Every structure is written in structure tokens, then in C-alpha cells.
Amino acid sequence: MDTSVMQSLNDVGASYEIIDCDPSFADTAAFCNRYGYLPEESANAILLEGKAESPVYALCVVLATTRINVNKVARKRLGTRKASFASAEVTKSLTGMEIGGVTPVGLPTDLPIWIDNLVMEVPQVIIGAGSRDAKIYLAPQNLLRFPNTHVVEGLSMPIANK
Image (cartoon, rainbow, N blue to C red; front, side, top):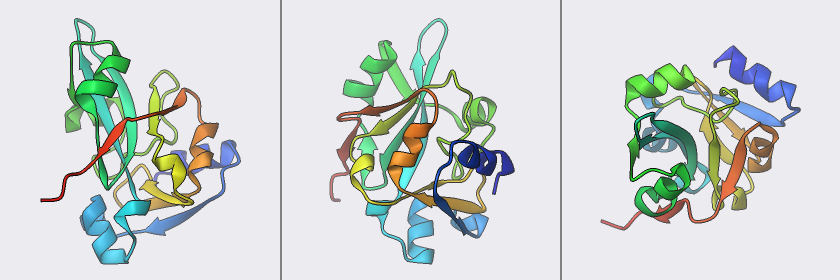
């Protein structure tokens, strides 16, 4: 567990539970399978990069049962012609976190955090904890306590069944 993430949660008075996990099971599907949580109550935090002369970024939080609507909603909000997932290196550089542990908690205040409206509809959600060895379980309303956080309608789309 990243101690600065826990400090950020405490600073805003969030109510939460920490779930320890084996780092090799930090990715959402593996975590849910291993520890018995539902994908419907798990969210992924993904850094998007808007391609421009000076790239722009936003951290998107979407349920594990959905995918980011990159081309329609996210790209337009970024104000760029193209957008894609930021690389692991860029994600680490901007957030200080590795893929599998990225969280919307304790980020630089100038990085926008976009939370899909569907995340706000679940009673409790599992998110990363800033490292691959833990997760945070909390009511999603707690996420709105952090600066530069916005609920975005239609940020995600259901994942098509294969």
C-alpha cells in the first residue's frame, strides 16, 4: 500500500477498506478471480493521452465491465484530434504508479480525474491503491472529495461479449 495514497484518503476524510493482495494478482481480472470480488464492483484507472504539440492527460476511472469511450467522449473532452492510453512509462512518470496499482487518489492536482457515471452507481467500488500489493474498497462518492475530479456521462461503453 502506498502510504501517500492512504494519507490522501485520510486527509479528505474518506471512509475506506484496504484489501491486501499478491502483486502477481493486481490486474483486475486476476484480482477478482483470486479474491472473489465481482468485476461489476471493480474499477480501472487508466491514464489517457491526448495527442497534441503539448500532450494533455486525464485519468479515467471506469468499471471493469466497461471500456473507455476514447474516440467519442474522452478525445473530445481532451480537446485533441487523437487520444490513446498513455504508456506504462508515461503513467509511472505522471502518477508515480505502476499499471495494476494506479488510483485516482493522491494525484497531482493539475491532472484531471474523470469518473464514469456508471462507477457512481455502485454502492462500493474496488480501485487501485497506488501499488500492486493492495486495493481500496470504498463508496465511490468518496472519490469526489479529491481536487479536479469530475463525473463524466458516457465515459465508458459496455464490453461486447466475445
